[in-house]
Image 1 (cartoon, one colour):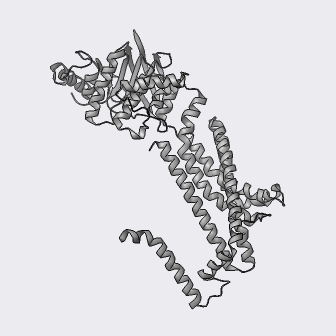
Image 2 (image 1 turned 30 degrees about the vertical axis):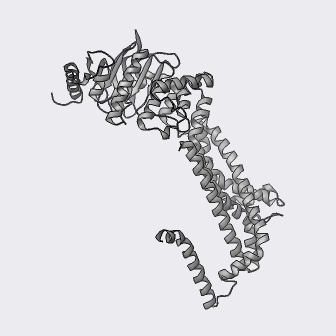
Image 3 (image 1 turned 90 degrees about the vertical axis):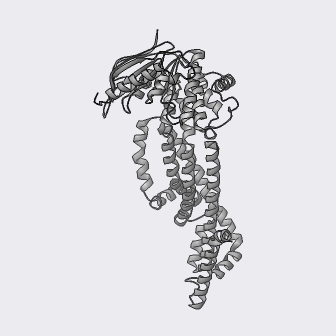
Length: 255
Length: 247
């Protein structure tokens, strides 16, 4: 009984909050353009479902594409600079500056370079910039994280640099790479949404565009509908990546 | 004939001197224990013998051949993403031995340390003692002439520790590699070595060398013989002197 209550607790809280919200909207006669009741949001989701699904897919596609681009570039660069301490010292400050510069501030430049008629390209680039750093930092740290005694053994056994990289440093970096990708996946969704706000969308409209469009028309319930779907999508992506990370880590650790 | 030697070596670290001046020559097939207080430079001396570190001053000579020197550290130091057999085969594979041959010899080395059948186990599935045996098998797989053990049993319980000490002596008896092992357990040093080198607190110098009489591997009940007790007492007294305790 108690266990069932524990399991139901989050849902009960959600239901209570929604009920309170619904009651407040009706009781206080709040205008729906300011705060629509949950029932109106539900109706907006139900009626806008076909376009919401398409937009969700577009946003997810951009985020995953950005994640893939960031993953390849970040790992390649981390690998390149890990081969030489001088290269790492040279790249670090630049990487930090690029990282702390707000991506929104870079957006207008990227939009020019991507071409005004190519907002999708700009969105992927911007989201990839945001997703780049957790993977890059994780890879740089991970490639240095090998057990020092194991490194000594590799030296003792006369391992070449390539052997040490392939058989010691890369496998040792795996937990750090997994963690980096998990963080980056969350950031790539944020990046894709923010970038769409700034860059707009071409033929493929994402959830950010749905929110802006509904906002411009003061259709607040539809804004909430897009937000709810966006939250669900991000949560599902998070769960999927988290599961994948745990499974990969379990395999890596051998248990 | 000596398999490794340190002559008047000194090692300086940024925070000060860690070792020396220190002399040590290891004869072929000899069993030598290094005892000394924490921070006396025992592990540094071992790394010099392995060639993993160079002395600041003095001369360190060692076997140059690949796989002729092996090291076992205090922790098992196994790669968690590899099976026991893959960990043991690693030194061979790094030296270019074909994978199948390396795995076959690894299985043989695992059998020698009593772990036949555990080839596919991952380190996380092994107990501390078993992981240490895998580490030992990895050190033996190249048939080294010098085996360096850096407090290999420090993290184990007393029973496992004693069993492993006897196993190491039995393995030594099979192929007679020279063994140098670092410990701060005096009884373990006297039990396992024919020569115990006692070092002072850091920077370590030799305070005393004790030749331990008796057959190797040790016969049952060796720990209760007068010879054993006497050596333990002499080494303990030297250790106390080396730590600066009043005589």
